[in-house]
Amino acid sequence: MFDNYDDNDYEFGDQKDERLEILSLFRELYKDEDRDNKVEMGHHIEEMMISCTVGKYKCYASNFTVLQHDIYGNCYTLKTGSLKITKAGPSNGLSLILYMDKEEYLKQISEGYGARILVHDRDTYPYPGEEGFFVPSASETQIGLRMVTIERQDKPYGNCTDDIYLRKYGYKYTRSFCQTLCSQELFFKTCGCYEDDVTELYYQINTGANEKFCETRQEIKCMSRERARQNKQKAECDCKNPCREHQFLKTISYRNWPTEDYMFTLKDGVCDRIPDQCQDASDLYGQTELYRKSLNYVKINIYYEDLNFERIVESPEIENAQFASDVGGAVGLWIGLSFLSMFEVVQLLFECCAFAGHKCTNRSRRRNGRRRKNKSNKTKENIYSTEMDNKKSNYSKKESENNLQLNKRYQDLYAGSSHEYNYIDNRV
Image 1 (spheres, rainbow, N blue to C red):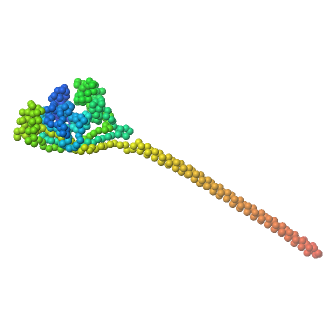
Image 2 (spheres, rainbow, N blue to C red):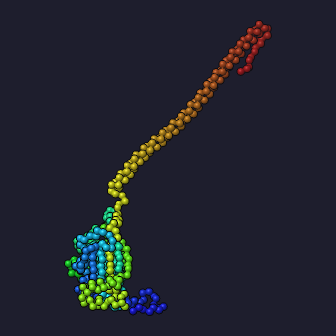
Image 3 (cartoon, rainbow, N blue to C red):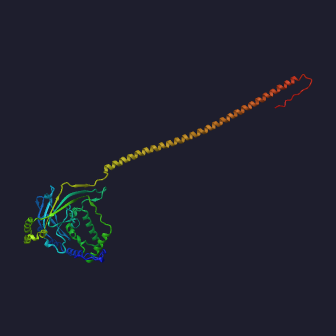
């Protein structure tokens, strides 16, 4: 089954795994079967469920709905209706004891013993291949849950979508569900048919349309090209997160189960459920095959660890009222600053004008002062010049008068003399 690799086989992408090729071929053949045949070939909840309780109340096969999966066969979803869990702890949750009938497992196809479990929100489409986990046979598995509620904001604060699928498809909106439907619409738009992997999905949503799935060689080639294109290119589906969703945090623990004595009780349950298997069940309890026979049984307990739940709520960083208040305060501040700035500008202009006027006045005063000073100096010079001229004139007049008087005296002195004497004063 497994390849013996040598040094030449390590080049990635040259060879395909033989075992995976066989599994892929088997699944392709399984897909081609009619849904009713596939359900009939799988395990039936009426036969495999030895015990089922929710709290202290029994649950029955009619409380489960079947979903066909190409890998895990018949998957069953428990619908409890209006029943609610009011207490926490393992004794108040779901308790299941299942008969796995390992003799019916497909040799070289089935890889292990146990069951696949998926805990999901009510009314959401299950994806056990992507989201589930295994619980082993011959063990009791305790699954403690804590619920987390996430509430997101839509526009203008966020980007989410309300539940628009429940009424149309019968399932709540999830991002995975949206991406699956959108991808199939792209397949149908390109190739005129849907992938054969989603036959069960369209059976469950029951749209009433006559869906066509890719079957011919040409359609399968087109489907392969479209799948490769979707894997390489950017996603064309605008699938947002839901505005409200529930998630479950899980704490998982195991223990060996059942005990030797309890296996006799399980044998009685198998005989009640599957009379045809009663003889085989009675033969299960030989001491030499105790563990091997215990692989037919699995016990699962799913419960709330605490009835309190975590709530994560997106809230606007700024509410409308707070935003209006902040804007109003900012606008008021800006208006106040604008008025202050305007008055400061006016004051600055006034001070500049006053400074310019004062400077011009001082310059004019200095100019006028210099003019008055120059005029005063000129006046003083004129007065001094006039005085000097007057002094000179008076001095000349006096001197002339003195000269005349002297002349006259000389004339008088020498008038009676016998000598004639003329005195001419040549002094200027």
